Length: 252
Image 1 (cartoon, rainbow, N blue to C red):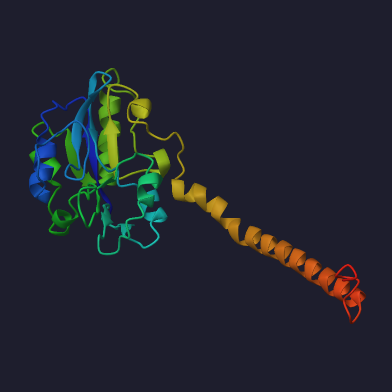
Image 2: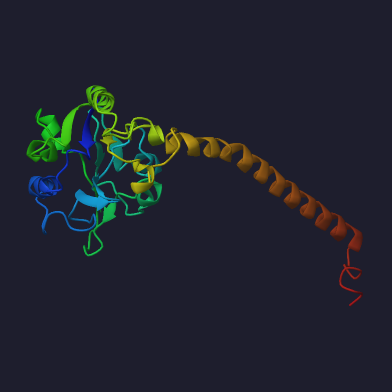
């Protein structure tokens, strides 16, 4: 079953331990919890509109970054993480444009740059362990587990204390759903710029891509028709000129 993370903004104390644990687990340099994500920072805690929020890869159920990647450097695993293979990456950065949450970062200072983002501690998951951020969280604001179980718990918290929570589990359906779920005291749609559509972005672009083959055939047929018409007119003109071609050359 697919794993995931439930982040509860209401119980978060903004300590930044999740960012520090992520850096330690992935051997990333720099101070934990800087103002923004970067090539060496996969997750941060931010204060937005008076509440704490976490910023990191949502690990979409149908990730647009993987769909946009022309070489398969990004893929969704059965365990939940969207993982990245730097050996396949060609540096096109299509994933940057495709991600609805603006998460991927790039090693601009490196001579051999790679795309960087949270990988949901895929290596730890293989060993049957929790993510580093979930292990370290002192208030269990970041909880790791089966996505379906996390959804049940999130909804239980909302119903148990409706005055404390905005009645919505963010990530359940948005952009096709994600392995990372959010609950908070406020509507996170605008705070975190969460897409309003419940359809995954790859499913939306697929409709447009399906029209490419017939459009291409129609365009090719039209160009061939123009070429054939021009070629035929040229042949007719040459035939009317006569053997000495004086009529075509203006009598010269």
